[in-house]
Image (cartoon, rainbow, N blue to C red; front, top):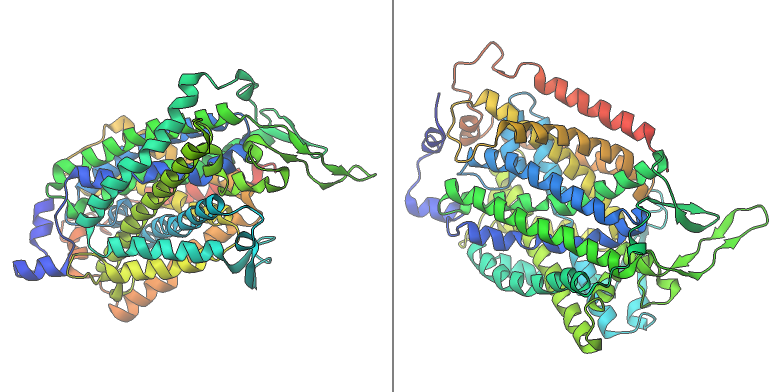
Length: 575
């Protein structure tokens, strides 16, 4: 049975100079990947408002549980990444190799779902950063903040959804192009830039996390009773842990996963590590520890400072008892410093920076400085996403999943065609009017990726038992990861549609779009054959049982069980 070294050695022979110019370059160690992945903690800014407004007082617990899940799962990713030190693109690429022996269709679904989960960070992040900037420079009712050119009404997908051009879109485009310019110079320049941005961006997050905790500005009433919210006659009341409350909690855990599980992006850079055997595990371990601190303390402080808030505008109740206009709240249901009519700003994320900038005190000058630093934090998350998602597209093209043009790299080793594809896709997403809906849809893909790749750990163990593993996860951790794979599917089935009817369906439809793309690449471009290096990775030259599948029917049973979990959990949801 060949080792990992054998696989690398079996790749087509190329001159050193040609290999260096035609592939990603080994220029960083684990600290470089750590700083590139340090943009992940800023993802707390993307959904902290939506989760708080959806779940209520247990929202801090949502974040703590979710980052705990993510940390456990990361060890499976670290193990499978070590099997392929010559590959880039992250856990989805390494997991796809496990599944391809059992289904040519399932393997590219894993890669595709990871990409469309990560890629929207560019659009959502640039939109939020643009909103922070415009909110800091101009009043909310200024013409620059209110003008809009509607292009397409997408109400048939979700009520109120549309493609539009406004100031947020234009500023967001400028930010995206700036990040693209940095990434174009290759991973080394990106790692150095993100180290500077990382230090700058983590300062406000740590201040926001620690100041309320140290000052004691966290009334116990903001945390108890520890029950989800409920609505009664248009007013928020304390709910209970009935099925409706469990559904809300599941919705919070579902959307939090998009942020908290994201530090697995550190394994995207395995192909660019100087010493992949040592650097892969260190990168994911220390990135995970950083995320545990931020994702636990920042939501705790955010909730402790704001609470659920008070009624600003009472609801309008018709004679028959129906609510024609819900109440408008301050606190976590709307920015405390804004008037009641801006209640959606925290839910959408646009008002989060304004709220957080006033959590540490110090007056308007300090608040404005913190807003600037939070913009840098969001830009850092955009850099993290562009670096990771573009490399996923690149490696998927090299492996034969996606069209060949995506496998091109420039003289700096940057996958520029994949980056341009990422950019074009996100310019469309940036025009969408509801970023929370975009986030929730993309997270459907992320949960599918998560399920496939946590299960790829044990498939690799069965199919590649003698391959060298620089890091081998303890059996119990690998097993817990498999359990969490099904837990995540249940959370998706229960909670996805909290963020809009049809969210789950829209996410599943987009996940299926990889099928015609893959069929074109595999059967039209490659005539039904995988690239040579991919054949080696699939280990097809070994003496295998009849049918060439050591795991037998277990992968198929796993997929069927996953479908059952989603269907059953979705049927149990109470909205």
